[in-house]
Length: 209
Image (cartoon, rainbow, N blue to C red; front, top):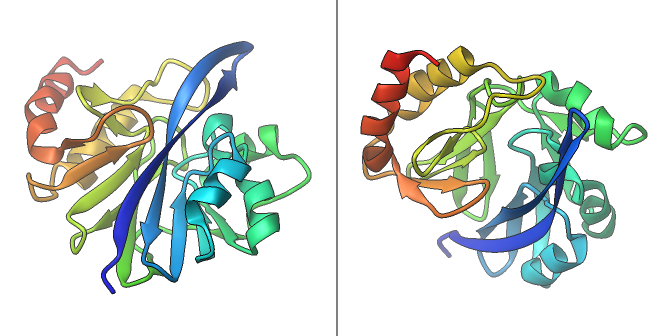
């Protein structure tokens, strides 16, 4: 059975640098009728578990370790037995939210995470956070970008652990090279495509800030 993509929107708060903001997050579920993985376990472990249903949850992959993308990960892992994956460069951010519970495994660039026939390649895309990653599957025609790329441009780089030139390099080198029809499935808000975003991003690259 071919893997499919499902989106669940959860609500909570993002906290960093002494500020707190209300946010809606996209939780992406990739799988078939029997097994699945979750990309970014945000805010509500119960709601995510209900969306997964009786499927075997094999992995929880974190696109980065801002609290709003990982706050439900340990609870979801504890109830399902799923393995939590995170890029090691985001361990300092992770430990700000979960000081007593490390991720189970560490992501590396170009590794492939398999789930129900999907093959998700890890693309290390620092900038929004040092360990930010995207997950690309040409078979699904989609890239899960977390907070690296949104409809209209790059993710925010105005807070600690972020860097604007780095996120531009990541987008140019790792994302704009993907086929233009590739669906961009973001950490917040509506999906877009690589082709739709490329003209906007070229303007950002030229401006340099």
